[in-house]
Image (tube, rainbow, N blue to C red; front, side):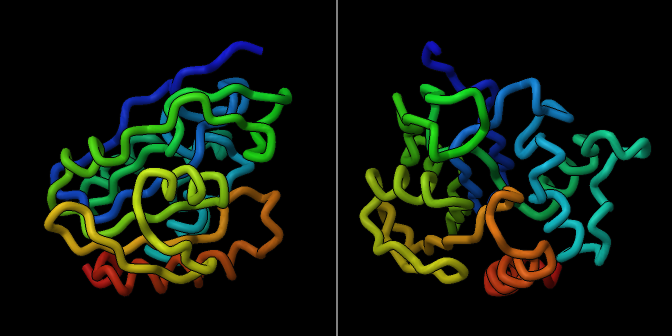
Length: 193
């Protein structure tokens, strides 16, 4: 398998206060929409639905065979949540979406992302590979899952949150994942708005 470049542009709303970073998108054959966390087997948009709307199906398209990209984008713009991944180029060592079989060929320039979103006060990584890749660029203690650690970026005091993976391969019930994410959104003031 040859190296694979990231298929999406960073999603960076001008008002972004939180930058969410995964590792890398799954192969296109697993996509239900042309956006981040596109795999129906990934629960990220269900987690958001539970937290903000008390409905895990809130971000599903009417026919339930895809996520509703436009509804997700409108929500993220309103709440000031940016999305990208810690790897810009990867090599898949196996024909699947597992981080375990992703080799990072080119990490994303995190400083460049942060310079484009000056109101950003926190980063969240949504898996171990993303956390490890980020920490190669930013000096910050690794947070335990469900917690945060402070760090400095230029003249900004920021926090790195480490959340459980939204992949169903991560052995934690959807409601328990949502409860952990809810704490982060509350601390950042995103949930109250």
